[in-house]
Amino acid sequence: MYEKETADRKKLIIVGGGAAGMAVATSVRRHGNYDITVFSSDSHTAYSQCGMPFVLAREIEDFNSLVLRKKEFFEDMDIDLRLNTTVDSIDLEARTVSTGKKTYTFDKLLIATGSRPEVPGNLRSGAELDNVFTLRTLSDGMEIDRAMEKAESIVVIGGGGIGVEIAIAAAKRGLRTFLVNRGTSLLSHNIDPDMAEIVQEHIESLGVSVLTGETPQSINGQNKIESVTIGGEDFPADMVVISTGVWPETELASDAGIEIGSTGGIIVNDHLQVKTKQGFDPDVYAGGECVQLYDFVTGSPMLSQLASTARRMAGTIRDNLVSKPSGFGSIVNPWVAAVAELQVGTVGINTRIAREHGIDIASGLATGSTRAGYYPGSTRIFVKLLFSNRVLVGAQVIGGEGVKERIDGLSLAIKKKTTVDELLELETCYTPPLSTLEDPMIFAVRGALKKIPGSKK
Image (tube, rainbow, N blue to C red; front, side, top):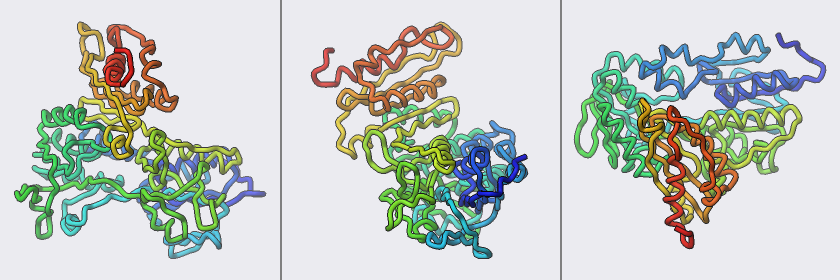
């Protein structure tokens, strides 16, 4: 299918078979002239991590549906894919990587090692018990699914996006479900507490018992999980899923002398080339969740666990590998999740991040409908917009429909540094089945304007 142009073929090694690694492998094969080898410690590749909670909820038939490309596809593309293979070391001076069994030379290298689940120190011994899980790989998802078939009760630890989705999946399958979050509101990395209240009320209506402001003291059992101690009380459980966040997998890079940033991610330049004591290495790239990026609004270093960000990074790396110099700038990190019947989206900074960076903001919160009130199927929608110095810096939207489209548009507005005055002039379309005569975003803009000093009310 792909003829080998052996004359000047260079060797490209990719460490990591996730969204960034495999996207680079396939696109470089189409547009470049490399011998490509991919090493992945996973037993599967080219699958959707984001889809796993929906298999657990039985909204998607099975885990095989999440496999987008089988190993044979990459073989046909002349990509040497080594699954279940761990790279033990990288020697930048010798231009080699070692798997323990063999050493391989490279001309170009991509480190796309992703992230690993973080388990709080006081829970690590309990995490070794049977039926205590983290969700990261397809194999993890399959194990959780099998446990759910036999379980009657579950404790999900962590109220971020994945934790919320797993709790909903468990409740839908009839398990007695407890969701425990150390913060006082759910999805706190993404949305403000007033918006989180909407989410919590919705998932509680589905039968999930939510415990906020609580940190589990221990996970208890002999060989198998029996209970979780929360606030001095033991909650019986047949299974536990720990979803308390992830940490960039950068040990391999660090051991090779590659510099790691304050966020724990690999430091890169605009071309996504890694940094060593000698400067940025033109032949070594990093992409995906293991990389430190920069926030467009604050200018501060940050991490992104979004597949969409990883795919964009893959495009930049591909361009540079095929001699089309390309840069990757700061990000606004647009995020959306399906929380049962609710869609939840955010982009830019939230109030917590603004406070941490000393940014004064004025916010507007509006409630409206997604369709004309008389049209069947209309749902409520909540829009919160944040402005700093009259410029849009953050947005949060929750509703039964129409969330992604608004977040996408507001993502562009933040990057264009759109002002409150410009948004007041926004023209929106209208038809009863799809919208109201005046979009709720406009009411949120007006609400923020009232709080901005010196504005005409």
